[in-house]
Amino acid sequence: MKNLRPDLNGVIAIDKPRDWTSADVCRLLRKLSGGAKIGHAGTLDPLATGVLVLCFGRATKRIPDLMDGQKRYTATVDLANRSPTDDLEGELEPVGVDQPPARDDVEKALESFTGPIMQIPPAHSAVWVDGKRAYHLARAGENPDIKARPVVIESIEILEYEWPRLVLDVRCGKGTYIRSLARDVGLELGTGGVLAGLVRTESSGFTLDQCADLSDLEPEGAVERAVLASAGADTPG
Image (tube, rainbow, N blue to C red; front, side, top):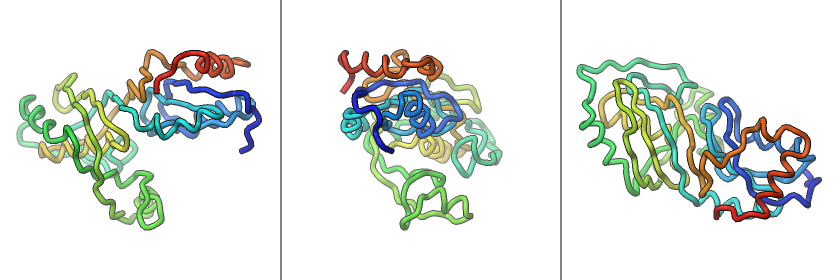
């Protein structure tokens, strides 16, 4: 789309609402800004909420650098179920266990997922497999052959644990799938592992308390004011 607002350049962060895609947010703000060039620095799944960093105009050149920044999430994992999508979008399959794992068992399992690790993205993800998106193949009933790839998880901390609900604070690098982490933690424990909730609390130096709500940007001129204010201030990165 042609950039109808070449004067609008800057970086802002919004708290992405649940059930919105990152592309949905970009489309709305492009419309509200009168056709500005816009891109996001790291997608969020529709069921996730939290920090979505948006770049306008010339600032879109910063997207690769911003995507390299650390991400932080609050992830809620359901250990009693599995799902083909590794989250609540797929049909849940209950998993029976003889004895729920103790907190010490969970902490020990999490140790194997910190640092540089190899991770297989979810079958229902946007990674390319033989020239097609994996989720297209999965939705067609195929089992996409997705290769493990290196990611870095800086730290994982248990915030809450009461079977089967596990809440984690995760700091990680780019390319990490929290859905895959939920799945793999469950496999390590011999339980289910479904991502039941996800909030991105930090992305590329922006924190949740720095984010605007979409409703804040709907009044006429609000997007422009937010972007111009960010361009005149020190922004992360």
